Amino acid sequence: MSIFQRIFKVTQSETHALIDKLEDPIRMTEQGIRDLKKDLQQAMTSLAEVKSMAIRTRRDADNKKKLAADYERKAMMLLQKMQNGEFDPADAERLASQALNQKEQLAAEAAQLAQEAERHEQMANQLQANVNKIKSTVTTYENDLLTLKARSRTAAATKKINQQIARVDSSGTIAMLEKMRSRVEEDESLATAYGEMATADKSVDDEINAALSGGSTPSTSQSLLELKQKMGIT
Amino acid sequence: MKIRDFFKKNKKDELDPLSDLSLARLKKGYLVDYDLKTWEVSAYNYYDWSEGDISHEWQLRSGDEVVYLEMESDDEEEWSLNRKIAFGRLDSQIKKRIIETGDPPEKIVFEGVTYYMEETAGGRFYKDGKDHGKEVLQWSYQDDEGRSYLSIEQWGEEEFEATTGEPVEEYQFTNILPG
Image 1: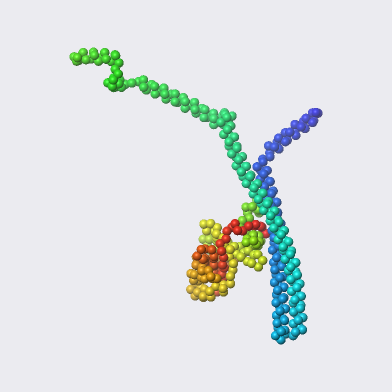
Image 2: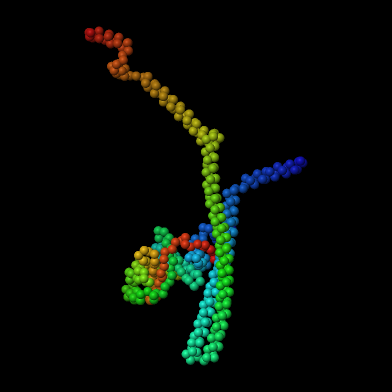
């Protein structure tokens, strides 16, 4: 391998290491979710357009249907007027026929629009299912990210604690605890020593009381005899 | 405009398709599914009853049908769905009584349901959220079980409107889409 190739390889590996360091998986996931939400928003906009179109088409179909019914009603009224002798039969029939033609035309348009509305509605249902799928996916991802963030924080805290327990961090809490422990032990030893000294220094009263309560030493008995003789007590 | 403000504005305008599309944030042109139909929000109005007491109202249209989705925030959000009825369908004595005494009766029977007066309020109505409100008086009634509502509104000396409705829950409204 030539020197240039080696330099190139070293540079390449260093660059990869740097990029690995820069990549924060949490931030990258957040960005991924943001991108997904943008896609979702676009899908929702398209769905809204199709749904609006379906609503408008259905409304148009209904209106045409109503208008067709109106023309039929008018044709009937014309024929009724003719029957009652209130209107010229020829004119009445001509107008009634025209009204019926209008009715037929409108009814056909209404039927066509209704079919179109149905197609739009079917399309809207399909799109709605897709949008719901994306929504559910994004929600799952968001929840996963939340859980992973919490787990990541817990893991970091646990790692820190375990490091301290393993005394990896000698200048940290464990070292302080050790220092404190030795100081406590020192204090405890000192306290015991003081306690022993306190029992060694008995007062005369303590001795008298001890003798009176029983167990007297031989030297004490001797002194007592001497004192009795001195006082003439047998 | 500073570059920072520009980006701030863009961020503000961004809509979170999951958390921002809620019933309380419906806007004119939005679509929402309820009772197996898709409804288009054709208007947003609100009533200001003073002292921060506000009722929000969305006019929803599906085909020829028009309903009014209302939200009142008391301790918690309360939703109702109302339909306008011709005031003349109520007992003719009601109008007479309001004009004469200033108040309708405590009890109203309509289509076999007995409604009892719950509250009276006076405030301003803001159509499409516009600046200048219109004075309105409202008497709210509900049946024994609180499952049916009736409301009378007075807009002028002799101008009245009535609605009937029922309580609804937010979960009943699905697939909210921005228009």
